[in-house]
Image 1 (cartoon, rainbow, N blue to C red):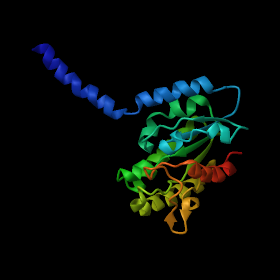
Image 2 (image 1 turned 180 degrees about the vertical axis):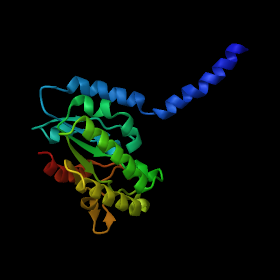
Image 3 (image 1 turned 180 degrees about the horizontal axis):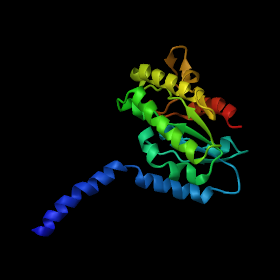
Image 4 (image 1 turned 120 degrees about the vertical axis):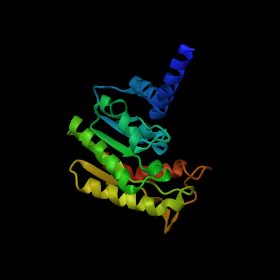
Length: 214
């Protein structure tokens, strides 16, 4: 009976740990893959964030003149990235990092103000740990499946833009407006789920982001 009582006490703690770190296994897998690719003697550019980064499979091919590592982990939010700054960014000693977060934050009903507060904390940590590293914040993208949240996404993007403008060494890249057809989101740049992009969508991202690589 005593053993059962102890087990019942420990079980909630175990479950809490799993809930607090839902991306632990995925991050470990991302690390293992990138550790096998990374050449520490070359300057490194990191792309990290949620599934729009994770699914960008040809990042290195698009930027062959750079060493590019993709440490994206699907479904993540700024608060998740904060837990893994070492594993996904700092351990690779990058000269530049592109961050795409905020898409899932807004979908999970977080206010733009709350999202920005978390982003500010992440930027402070990165600047403290690696002052010379350049940081590029990628705006939230529009999508078919989340179009009803467009007002909040626009507010978040304005705040991200302002955050970058107020801090040296931080840039903001806008992918929102290039993905629109006038005032509506383009229909031909997504896969069937209406959220994730096809190759046409990534062509748009490439055309914008290439100007921030050097």
